[in-house]
Amino acid sequence: MGRLVGLSLLGIALALLGERLLALRNRLKASSAVESVDLPNCHLIKGIEAGAEDIDILPNGLAFLSVGLKCPGLHSFAPDKPGGILMMDLKDEKPRALELRISRGFNLASFNPHGISTFIDDDTVYLFVVNHPESKNTVEIFKFEEEDNFLLHLKTIKHELLPSVSDIIAVGPTHFYATNDHYFSDPFLKYLETYLNLHWTNVVYYSPREVKVVAEGFDSANGISISPDKKYIYVADTLAHEIHVLEKHPNMNLTQLKVLKLDTLVDNLSIDPSSGDILVGCHPNGQKLFIYDPNNPPSSEVLRIQNILSEKPVVTTVYANNGSVLQGSSVASVYDRKLLIGTLYHRALYCEL
Ligand SMILES: *[C@@H]1O[C@H](CO)[C@@H](O)[C@H](O)[C@H]1NC(C)=O
Ligand SMILES: *[C@@H]1O[C@H](CO)[C@@H](O)[C@H](O)[C@H]1NC(C)=O
Ligand SMILES: *[C@H]1O[C@H](CO)[C@@H](O)[C@H](O)[C@H]1NC(C)=O
Image (cartoon, rainbow, N blue to C red):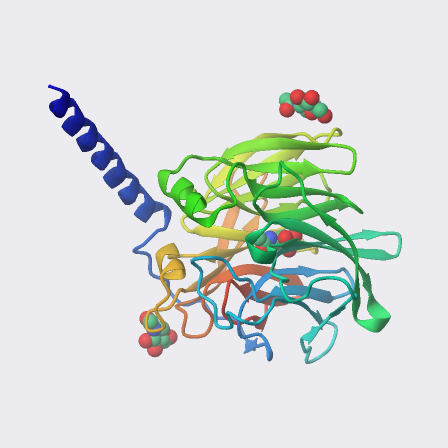
């Protein structure tokens, strides 16, 4: 009898794992192919060969790019090179990427930048960087000194509510929202959690006076951004193929307003400052992203979402490529009818719109 119970429990466990495996294939959209959508005058940016995971552009056309992200289980073309922050001046006819110097005392050897976000206060530009030194999780705040192409390190933030941060959006000189894994920073446990589809990722608000969970229950909350009027926070739930629109309240709490379902793995979000449209770096096939095969590389896709608050938001594909040019697009940002597309571990592409 005991044995029968044991066997049927085993059967149930196996069925559950099988069901989770099938579900994972759907969440990864393992069979999707892409049809090319091209843009005029695209070129790859010199000096970016191992990823430009996140991009943030200032109103004056200076773009920051986080490069060289390394994550357990994720391919890298330069596994031994520390990450860094590059800058491009998109007002230039032919912008070039140059690496920003960082103040002495900051540990550059273990710098592993992930999501970034800028905040302008009077004339001061703050750059927030999610950092994973030796698989740990911190948020670094820098002051950008333009005349010297220099980042002055101001502060390292660690907090028990921020054990595993993916992305941030700055809303003050030391205030931000972050997408975060509620429980685990250990890579194996994170993969297991993802596999079992536990919906344990959340959004945390951080300020020096108050830190709180403001939204939870996401499958894999990743990119985060803010509407131009600062009223709404947008969160990309990558494996759920969803973008959540959350209303921001005066006490910084968030409440869910709507969810837009898409048919691709949505990674990072940026806002077109001229229209308020959301640009999304997407992965049409997540399996190719995680199991890297140079002969069958991950593809790239950039979506534009117009009027997300309306009844029928318009979603268009701005750019798509099967990986022959650009592999694993994670972010796309617009400045003055130009599009800068970053990738998880491949190159970065600059196009006209
Ligand atoms: C909103 O935030 C306050 C603290 O700022 C907290 O006490 C409260 O529980 C939050 N409300 C909701 C609905 O999350
Ligand atoms: C990608 O598309 C190009 C043509 O646009 C084609 O030559 C190439 O074989 C395709 N690669 C894959 C992996 O499908
Ligand atoms: C996504 O992009 C936004 C805006 O460009 C940025 O603030 C954020 O840090 C990025 N996150 C990730 C995970 O790339």
